[in-house]
Image 1 (cartoon, rainbow, N blue to C red):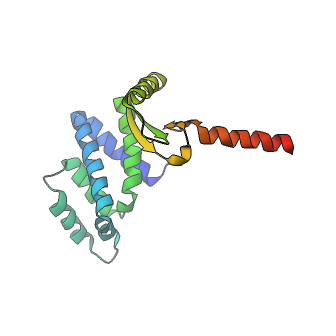
Image 2: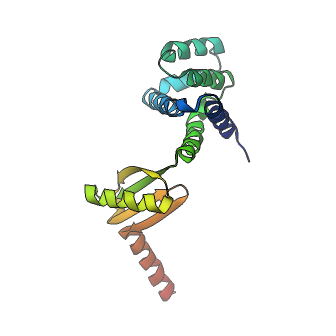
Image 3: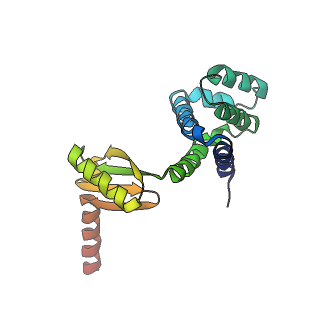
Length: 181
């Protein structure tokens, strides 16, 4: 099923890549910057979703906040989302746009979760290995989660490699329960 957020993301992506591909990174960065603003200022997003505020007033607020500060394609895209009452889909649109961007730029977003912060040498080894596995340039995001206990959980795309102590303990528990039953 092709959902609306995919259609919007693909439309913007196609526009940029067909009209002025050299601006793709700027558009991507501007979209992420706006996502940061929406996250830091949730009232901004609420304002765009209020049905009793006329669309032209919402567009004026967007113009005042962003005109001259972001790429024209992104500004116009915000106008379209607002006019079509799709502003609340922005994060899903960005998620899909990011997937398209990463594919075009041969990038892979990889998240590594460990119980404690990892040393630089280990991070570089993981990055090199994941570059080899994915065949892409890796954007590494490091997270800590004490429940991992030890080892690491690596996720990219739809793949999760769970090398955590927690996962090993859960497997051991399942094996023992299966033996006893």
